[in-house]
Length: 273
Length: 299
Image (cartoon, rainbow over all chains, first blue to last red; front, side):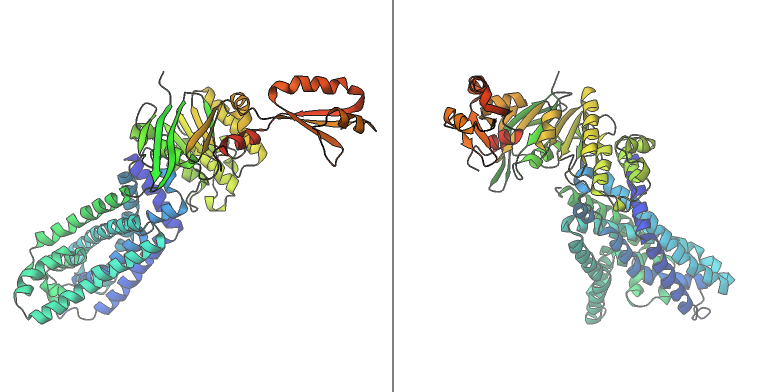
């Protein structure tokens, strides 16, 4: 445990000095405030509090931004150590590769949690400031925060795995951008195309829920929208959220980080210094 | 007592290339061995196998009685890689605190360790601003954590100035006196000569020679050189007395002989003392001995 903690402290220091903490936080706050300002208009018509509407918009934002931040922080984790030449010495220490990865994960999760809490928090402050009733939506804000951290953990793990497979930072950067495009952009576009061509047939009723649960980003979106019962204000893929029981999207949200970390450790064990 | 490091008939292949061919060596507690060899002779490969960083194909290796790379072995072995590197954003003190925690030691020892290698003034500066010699000292400091039983040092003095080198070997003397076994590689043969108990010469993946410097000197049986300076106007009579001698442009006569003929030759020169102004006897250098062994198989 001490080894994991010591690794996390060093990693946090490195991320802080490389401006990652301020970049991540700044990005989240900026986007969240823009969204909150833009999303403030429709309140009153839909019968829910302002904060819940903000959370619904923030969910759509987080689906893109949280995986991106996680991948940006993680792609260098193993490949960077290989390139700097710091890995051989580290691996002669009495510390396991799992402990090294868990230490990095802990530091990156703390940064991510800080960024989303400050980002969403500032949007929430704006919502409560314009409508005191919005305080009722605090529960969905809290849910959005911890589920964002879980979503981030999944993509951090995936980033470490790609970093270990690529062994060079430039290659790892390419892999992670490709993963981001496929997992959060192309996957949904493909699903939308299938729904449109299917016209409410077997794909939409049978395969779509499974496809949504199989992608951590979609599971995150479905979970937050259905938990907040905000399906009505969400468009696109989010509209399907009502068809999936809450426990299923929650299970996907909790299982994905474990799978991603297991993958990362397996890939890291194959790296010969 | 079991030796700290025991390697028997170790073989390692990288595809078609045999990097190590049936290498055997034993290193007892408190002994210092120097590994010599050209680039690509297999020194770093041997060290990485001892550290458990890479697997081997044949033979046996035990480190402190256990398999190399096992948690028990890693807890007792310290390593200094060639061209050691650290994260440039951390300070020397932070980096050492990190390594102390990795060995389960108190991070509070960081400053004392940095002071032992003369880095206490730069401890709070980022490693990115350090010179190569300073990074090397951080590397040395981390090998001193927690009384390791085996030190594996790959070119440890590269980048150090002569004074730091001497300090470094003083540190090693202290460690070996406390029972730490030391395996180091070096290109600077003269410092190895004075500061190690045993010399191992690797060539093309084979251990071609092993022993103390005196052993190797005897086995190589390289000729001894004499440099004779003739007294004023006596050069012709000296040349006549030693027809085998080679006259250099500098007015020196060069003679060489086998180890066993050293004293008779010296006696012959002494007999002509009135013709001789000065005399130097030059034994084969460590470089000569090293070249003799490492080029034996036609390199």
